[in-house]
Image (cartoon, rainbow, N blue to C red; front, side):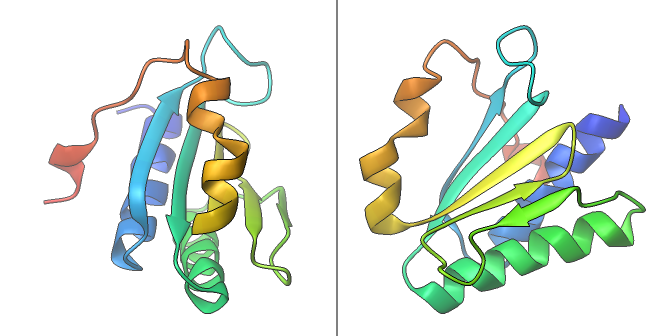
Length: 118
């Protein structure tokens, strides 16, 4: 497993551990210069959104990855956790449907991570 795949699965697992809803992982390689993977998910309250973002940050750091930037944490409407090769987008459920990143990046293949959550 490559480092960026390990980081992707760690971010997905961290989001799942905090009961993030509708977790989607997109393979952005060859599509975006920003990162190799996007993780998109949402929470149903400000506190849940913050808990998901915090867990992703903490799990990445435990594995030795540097968190480049975390934006939007205090507002908890759209928290962006930049882990370098993986960028996690943690939305409040209302903002997720408004921004609809899955449609915006519709040409990106969806990564199957279900085996990593068991």
